[in-house]
Image 1 (cartoon, rainbow, N blue to C red):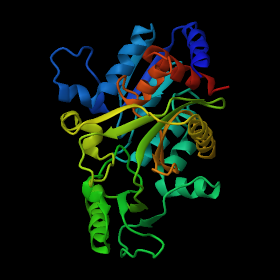
Image 2 (image 1 turned 120 degrees about the horizontal axis):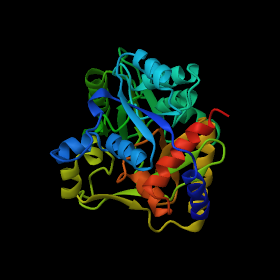
Image 3 (image 1 turned 90 degrees about the vertical axis):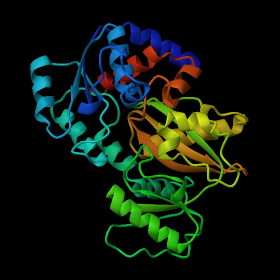
Image 4 (image 1 turned 180 degrees about the vertical axis):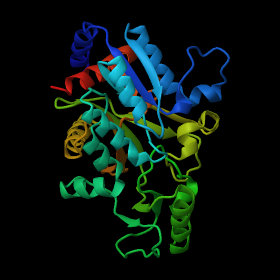
Length: 351
């Protein structure tokens, strides 16, 4: 795996320099320097800053473009500047997570290459219930679950036993997930579903809570896939009786991470047999959900060695110090090489 990455890196470096249009939320367009910015500000747009500055360092001509409600600026930039490829960092459009697929569809209509996932893969992966139904059909282990639409009474089926974890059906980045999301009674279930409906504004999904290790596995590729080393989110300072879940604070609050001993790093004590199973499962999931470019697959591993699929994240966080890039670096792929690889995969899509 490391050898393949090294070969790919040398080939990618030999590519000619490109005009790269980078799409992002307007509030996340980064400054040209970190000087004068607080750690909190940096944490908000660290991915955008890392991507733009690294691509420029590689010699590419890079133009950031903040978009939120209108596609016309994208069309104008493509028509006037004629980028070789669009680097897609959008996670929402019109304030909705599921609308980013329409931006990618628009890029396809413009016949311009772009990085990351295709529209169909975004649709299949972003729907937490849909992706689990597809994977369960293909005999990949998923938690039992039920969907609770807005406006309907919460009725739990008997096959759905406690404890459960309640999430937004379509939002990502742990939006709305807290310790209170893990419920052990019908009353708490109804309360948390109402919270998702009222505060997140989406349908809710309640899944069987799987106690165990939180594993993240990055995958790169369109047809030929490269699986990165298995990464783990560890909770050293969390009380034994507390649920070990990736809440919004766990994922995004640096001070909370430090104070609670929450770290991410290479998964230890994973047997060769299990690692092979993880790699094969990730490739199957990637192809079943028709993903492309790059994605992260999240699992729970029980104490008895059962691997449960949680969700697939197309176009995941790729800041230099986050888990995807860290896993790539652990495999011998520098951050420069990772971004160049993502650009190369986008350019190859047109063929």
